[in-house]
Image 1: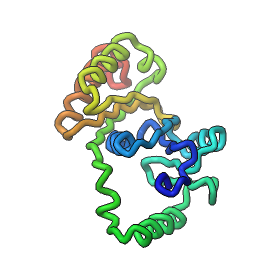
Image 2: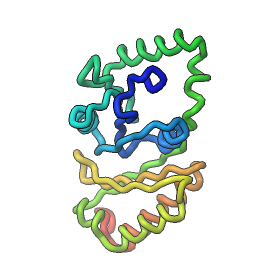
Image 3: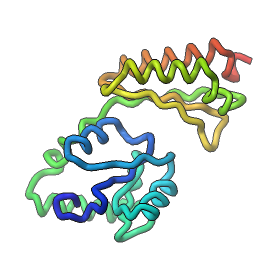
Image 4: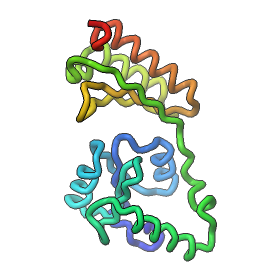
Length: 183
């Protein structure tokens, strides 16, 4: 879409859970991106409010706003096939710009999600972990919209690093007695 001048505002709309490798590929290709809360509803709202044509979620809900208001797998497949035919390149070659980072998420049952997210020790550990990860990864804490759960997600170059950072955050949350199992 960018090559054909069809990527309005040179922006793809994603959610905070989109893979770090995708953002690195966008940076290399000179494509801007916006991050919304999780949910294709939020992606579409941002797209509509800002005139963007392409957005989606890591789950595979890709929205091509010129043609549809929701994610449509068949439409997405047709658009990908169109690109393969136009470029005469295999999908593996077209997709090689995106190197997916390992992403591990741990769910912690908690009695008060906001208390966890706003706790000073948790906020300090989150900032520390993100500082140490730098441009090679990230840690994200978010509350589930449907369960009494806080999700600790880490992306980094390898799974061992992800697991180590998750363990650090879980240790802080447990030390502060913020999980259901510690009550």
